[in-house]
Image (cartoon, rainbow, N blue to C red; front, top):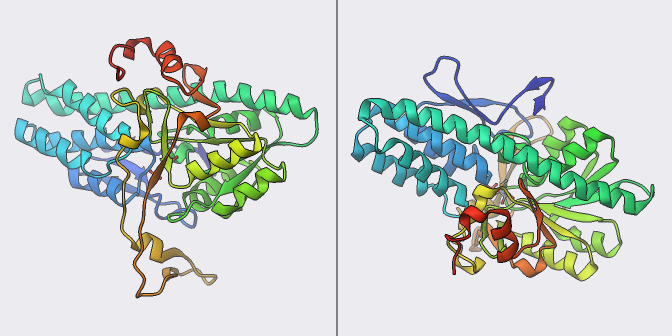
Length: 368
Ligand SMILES: CSC[C@H]1O[C@H](OP(=O)(O)O)[C@H](O)[C@@H]1O
């Protein structure tokens, strides 16, 4: 997407061929900074510390992380260690495991001298595939927004609520949940976005708001707990979120708080859509309760990072030092609360049969 007129992806090979570069998302929304990743550990740290985040982008970064590892040491031992290191960085997004396994399967059969180049090529392909997938999700999701706009019959913009950040910053480009919004905005369909701040790391307040602002999409940031009020007031025409892992039967794992939005949407008759790239489907499971839920450092809950009015970056404690905290990163929205899944192959219901019909090549692999 464009940042001050310049086209960016979230990850790209450095011009000197010695590194891969990323946007450091821990510096947004106050500073736009890029970082060079030159080693396996650089890549692992970028994922672990969430300089990059979002299921597709985590996968892309891990793929390049294998290139960085194999460039230094292309042995079987290093390949195994690198895969283990990268998969261990974050447990929930399935794209990480998928991308690592994809690159490993590509390079393992090759002579050591050919592995780094093959890993680099495959990582680039994974990035290009992600951009194509997300653009297609944008097109299919655009149809839903057009439909909502027609139903409003000129009575104001299509009011959309989204949770966390499933924009271009969560992917290589375009985003998943935000892709249809960008396409609708660019087509001149009036849209307005309620942006959940998304505690504890505020991906909504800091990343989604930044993205939408850069693209000129009207929006307002609200606290996570405002969604129910807005839906009861009829101020939300549809919800759309991303996902980090969706099961073969359509259970959706996404940022903590998604389930509560889906419950409020269900109770108020508001369509709840999930933008779902094919590589984020875990065909090996049906029950979302089997998905590992990442628990992160409690400091993300006890402290809030930000910039003071006089421009200093800091973090402040918001809980008593004596209070313990729990920091669950994700929750699971059962398929019954999902109106439809917006994939790169079209829109379908959140069900095993619908997903198998869209992805017949996985029908046999899908959990029985
Ligand atoms: C397109 S995947 C976006 C997905 O990833 C986010 O999690 P995190 O920021 O912790 O990586 C969130 O669940 C988004 O919906």
